[in-house]
Image 1 (cartoon, one colour):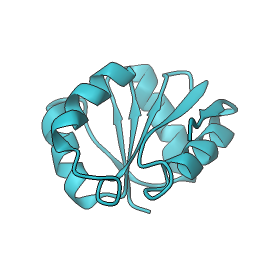
Image 2 (cartoon, one colour):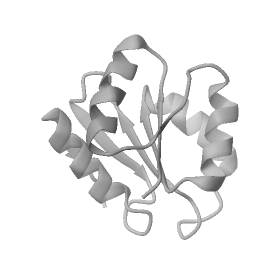
Image 3 (spheres, helix red, strand yellow):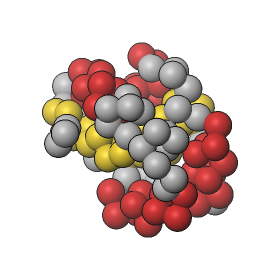
Image 4 (cartoon, one colour):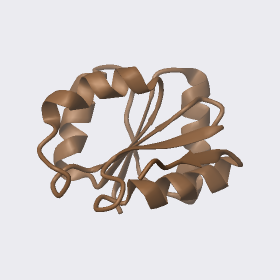
Length: 113
C-alpha cells in the first residue's frame, strides 16, 4: 500500500516519523496542503492526515469520485490517541490501516462501519 503522510504541526510531524518507521510512505510538507493532497489523491492508496478532521474533509470533498475509486483516508490527532477511518474503509483498506496505525501509537482505531 502506497501511503502519503500529512501534518500541519511539529508534533504532527513527530508522530509521522514514528508511523513512517513502521509503515513507510511519502511525507508531504505542510506548505501547499491542498495541492499536495490533490496530487497524492491520484497516485497513492492511502492518505494519513495528522490534523483536524474538518480540514481534511474540506480538502477532499471536491475530489470524491466513489468508494471503489477513492484512496483510504485516515485522520489522527497529534498524540496518536485516535486513528479515524474516514474514507474508503472496506474497499480502500482504511479500517485495517487505522487499526495498524493505532497499534504503533498505543491509541484507538475508530471504525464506524
